[in-house]
Length: 72
Image 1 (cartoon, rainbow, N blue to C red):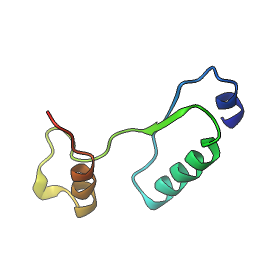
Image 2 (image 1 turned 180 degrees about the horizontal axis):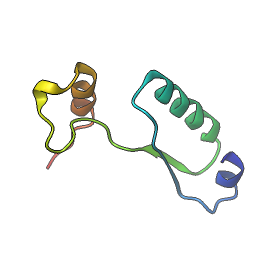
Image 3 (image 1 turned 60 degrees about the vertical axis):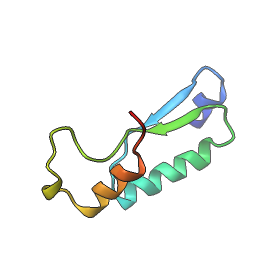
Image 4 (image 1 turned 135 degrees about the vertical axis):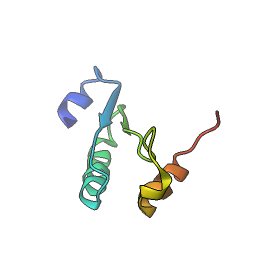
């Protein structure tokens, strides 16, 4: 991935990692490896699913949804 990102043909890498400690650790590791390239590294949004009921969500999911909020 780093080799391909270094050849300047890619603009963005979208990470689709699990919302777990392992997934976040892997994402941070990949971001560190790719920091020397000109590629934008993003990951899929996380938070409250469409149609989800707040009463059934865990605290971590709600916290992530609040952190990722944006104006409408």
